[in-house]
Image 1 (cartoon, each protein chain N blue to C red):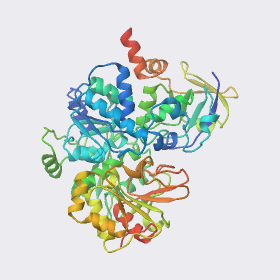
Image 2: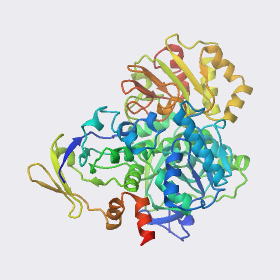
Image 3: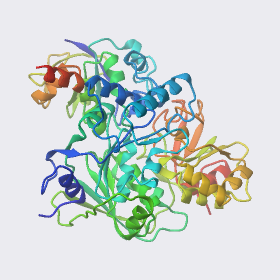
Image 4: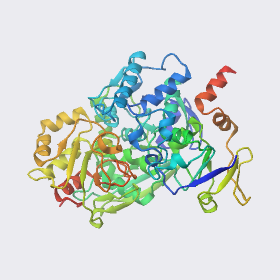
Length: 415
Length: 161
């Protein structure tokens, strides 16, 4: 009778006593999210289906975060399509251009609780597994089906459980841990699998750090990222949400469970080099001058990241040859950073601070790089052309490495 | 129908298939004019209706953007044949009516620019020299979805019937 937490959540959502990896099931959806960039296609598909009303206007969440504020007439027109959809279907949870990145505001504003099935028309929806939900990215047509029916078919995944142990060295963060894991297992090393993060190191991590791990599960092909809820999870959820929740944990003798031991006690700060997220090296082995630093995104735009970076930047100047862009992941984080004086430190150091949005992460809005330019980014993807020119390069790191490198003008680890 | 095989490597991500700056569009014609632009900005001009994309492992990794398979569909690609596919892309491509055929070893057998043919019902790929490669046939409901141009068309037809 032993099962993984993914199997238990999907059994609950499909009204069954038990499901096993490989089963095809139809699960009821607790939260369905679209944003301003994937939303218009979902709306188009939904309208083609020809259903009059969405299945449940209280379970749909629509934040604008990719092209905010609108940077072109096309973006502005997309926003109009979405606002009209929100009004027509009385969508209760709508966040216009001033709220922040979807994967930050969903948990922050109480839309995510343990045991739920959450789908988002965005591949980094797996972030929400940090609170013990089964959360996965889907396309726009699948989302249109969810809007019409309130459910979706899934193949129940097997689980790769990463047992992470060891005390992290100074200046080594969750980002370094997940980059290291992806480097080891490869960009397709967890394809179709649920990626569970467990062990003493994860137990000691904050919810923000756990979000960093789960956020990047997709970069090894994972269907979702998950952390078993503990006291920290419950405290977070009680603070941010009044929804009912249910805690599921993995039985360690579950048949579909594959345990991978990771020792992080000797881990150094890591960097993913162009053009794949699994091209990971210790910072000490990378010698590269940079043109731009981006601190932000659904991976590392949280208050702890801003604090880590501000600590390093305080009293220092961003290198003359470098543009540094700081984008808090949400309005709440922005306000907290203002209260703590972090924004002042960034501006004094010569960095540019922008309102909450996805920024240059996917090269469609702001802070785009040109041919031959090198970006060091705290986001999650470094694919060819990801942040602009296909002849540019993107390196990925923690906030601390990003800040230290911005001062130095080349990729280095903080001292 | 025979078509030209356009060959790509491993880990072809959705930013290569359709760069992020074009996600503001939903029109198939506009999207298809940028298909595979991340690696080859002339791809949409070279590609003819009925051609094939051949690729290595993990084709379609990355974002959930359905714009990527729509761009491939609009470019006239008959099917993508790869060693393996990423998960979200697999669902999206099927949902918009692009056949994905998993054929381990395909990149060793097909050269860029060769003319190949696919028989979906028999589950075979016929190479230029007449050699046949088998792939795992798609289940009949999936063939039906593809036949109707995607999931929405399939459901509409089903509801009408």
